[in-house]
Figure 1 (cartoon, rainbow, N blue to C red):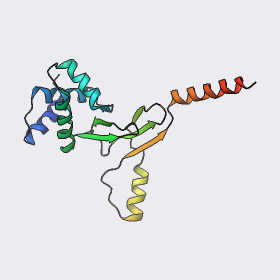
Figure 2: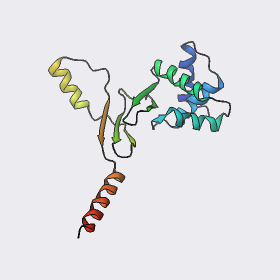
Figure 3: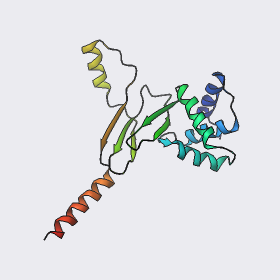
Figure 4: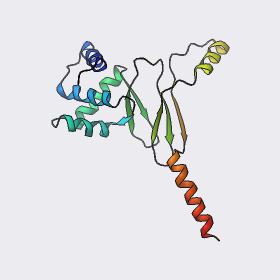
Length: 160
């Protein structure tokens, strides 16, 4: 796989003085393949191992650290206690926003920047230049809402 995005990412790693080993390249490929999704290090490792059997989990962790330091990756820790990673969009001014299900732990990304009006208000009112922001909303995903409603209906009928 050789896309313009992949070439840009690998060039940034090399320009920062890091060797582009086959294992690092594989890790970057996995992240590029899942560009719109947040993955844990273990999920990245499993996908990378499918592409390159010689890759180790420690190598994936080191590569993720390097990419985070180079501001290529966004690293977020949610209620599940695990770090989740995704490529920072080159076209986007801001990090993605996240919806976190407090029941099943599912993480959904919202890539639209819905806070631009709020940013303008903060800039005007407080004379504060915003460079970035992070937003995580906690609640129940659709599937967990349905499961909860079904459980409540079943409990109601059990009391009849």
